[in-house]
Length: 235
Image (cartoon, rainbow, N blue to C red; front, side, top):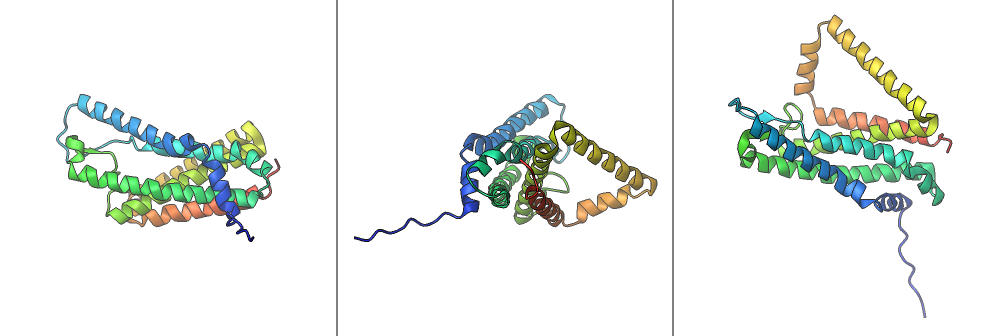
């Protein structure tokens, strides 16, 4: 009698499945906050006087990105030691987490794209609310929306993983210094743009440039840097 061996699951997929054991955190929590932001925005627009503008932009979708950022932190700061205890390498873990982020991003982009179609078809949910349409960022064709939303998801997730890496390696004080250094850098860049009177040129570049490509490029840089860093991380 012969037996057939079960197909071997790739280690990267195993890591993704391990992270998805916490389904509520990864699959439910972002959309729970997005729904909360949606409801809150509806209430606010109902209470505010109508300004008769073509569309009334709200920022409730940012709540979902805030949760995605926290997911990135948790993926490395809390779940990484348990993942390594299962016998996977740091490289495999990071690639598995990145693959999970890519899969979740594709789903996120799809939901945002469908939501945007419904939003346009209903006149902004009957109150001209632009929840899924962010001026200059998420307001193009369906495929542009899908690409931009997906790339933004991966970028924010990868950015959160960087904070998790710093926290694992340098603790709370190192994480605070890491955040403060970025704040100082952004302040310096803002000062340079102000001194050179280039705010209009920068705004035009962001409004007309390939936003999805820029976000995807930044996400790729963060993931590549994170992969190099996690391999040297002492846990």
